[in-house]
Image (tube, rainbow, N blue to C red; front, side, top):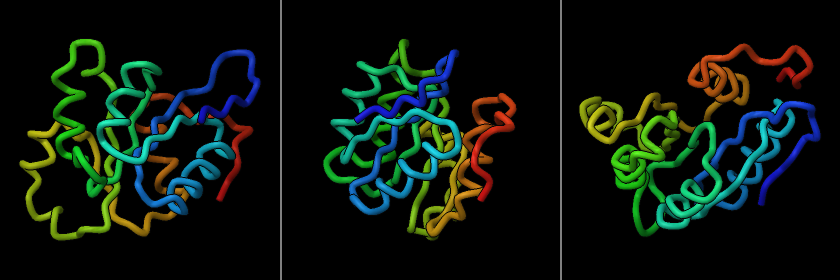
Length: 141
């Protein structure tokens, strides 16, 4: 499901990879209100397929998704010549993962946030990873 805000120049497209329907809906809402278009996947295999088809500007992924987990997904994205430049922001409820920063680097993850993640921080990190300034007309949380 893509969300288009109807702007003159396309807003950045974020692939949301999250198996929890409520969390995915929250991310879709927050990102939509912040000027992003979104496409969604509920597992790693579906996310890889959508990344190939949609070519998002950024991937926002949970690390504990079914099938191909978030770490495997990130490695697969970084191994693809067409997708390797896409920044990856991982969000996890498993704080124990943070004790192994090499695991994130080896998977090609650019930044990790822990759940629950305040909407302001999530949006700020996405803009930072995209290396662009947020539009002044986006929702402030």
